[in-house]
Length: 370
Image (cartoon, rainbow, N blue to C red; front, side, top):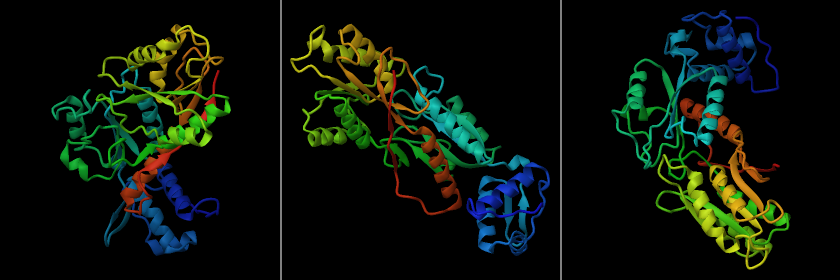
């Protein structure tokens, strides 16, 4: 191997891991080649044996190296490149799957940055939130691929209340789960922060009467959405208690914005074409960006002038920029950060390292648009 000068900008074991991976990519370390012993490497790189051990453990978790007791450490064959399974409950080809496609892009990028490969399997969950039958083609593909690829771990993204049910032996793999509101969730949006910051932002714009349109599950329950931050901030600022209207997520195949449009029309009917007063809201807090598309049409039909009559804040996702034909403020969920930390968490599970307190909660950032 070429010489390595360990700097102080990042941990030494990370620098060593990058160096060894580069040597493999450049062909200076061939598949199957045996590395020197840990003491020899520690002396060569002028670091401790513990640092060498950390670096080689990271590379072994990535699939770049293979470690055999009493035999040593070897460069893995190229066919043994670590593969991560990306499992999505949602059908990524559906028109409304903006959030899931954006999540797929950033997760795939984070996996590739670590030198891993990935394979994606979507539409694993039925329209009622339960796993699709095991004989479904995508499940068969997943089971067959498990025979040929060196899966190191799984990313389970919104697979529904039952999670992964097939093939059963894949459950033993290290995994990270984004599946609110289930108990085994590793990462989720901080809805309390969304409500608190959203109400404070609207109050700063001079708004006093806030209407909240909240998406629910198919049974009419708010699911993972919490309203405590909305209520706390309103009390703290001396505002009227925000009015809440629920919009149930329809069965797949029926556009969510259509349901939102119908509900918004009903809620806005008392103020249709009327001037301010009579309890008319001056602010709107919407918990879903797709839902906002239907709400926007209802607002236009009801005669609201935006933003003169009504200030709007909608929860959305970094990298998903839907157009509503009117100015709105966006509360953006930091999807790139979530992807980066989920893959880092997966790596910790692969290496058997201690985990942070879970689930990790992510706050968004308010951005104004025109």
